[in-house]
Amino acid sequence: MSEMSTPGLTGISLVEELCLLAIEDDGSVASTAGEPAFGMGVVGACLVELCIRGRLDADVRPGEGDAGPQTILMTLSQEPTGEPALDAALAYVAAGPVRSAAEWTHQLFPQAGELVRKALERLQTRGVIEAREARFMWVLKTRRYPVLEGRELQEAKLRITEVLMGGTIPTPHDSVLIGLASISGLLRGFLSSAELGRLQRRIDEVGSLDLVARGVEDAIHEEIELRARGMMIPIM
Image 1 (cartoon, rainbow, N blue to C red):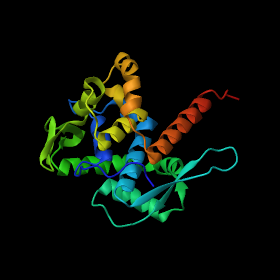
Image 2 (image 1 turned 180 degrees about the vertical axis):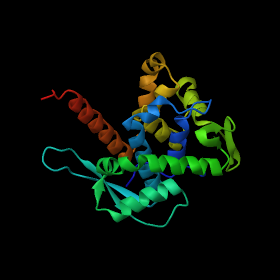
Image 3 (image 1 turned 90 degrees about the vertical axis):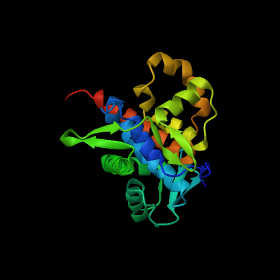
Image 4 (image 1 turned 45 degrees about the vertical axis):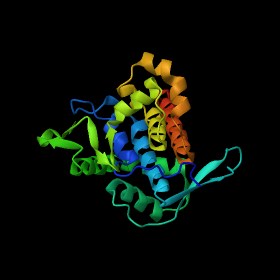
């Protein structure tokens, strides 16, 4: 089973907040959004959220040969969540064979652009962001989200900053968000290299990665190593 229980938060999903972290205050898209880690992080956010919502289950199984334990994802329910990005990811997983979280991250990586588009459109429908003309510039309408469950949610970047720099205790939702944002490279979009170095211990402490997110992290590392090796292949 996934290690993270359902947080007392509805309305804004992990994948939507991850996409918000990739938007600058002026509506431009952060350069980190063009990196493979971001796309894989978006896929991972969908998989984690689907586990939280009871559509998928994560189970640790021994690896084959020299491989370590793997987090296997199994479909529990194909009932739509009402979230286009999540439902698209669920459809892919439900239609495929049983795979590990890392394997599904690689498998769904080519669909990351579609998942991001669906998440942004959903945010626009909710009135959190707006699209400006043909340039498709996504702009935050407000620095704070609408009221959800009787309390106002601060914009994701502000909440993360308060947790990392101010010592605020994160909610389970924010803890996983920080973990995903870290492995996706998104913290570099609003924290300097010096700040990241100084805060790394705090990031490791509060940035919880559940079973699925750890599989996503493995997939990101594998992709980075693969691309690095590809760059070093001599031209014949």
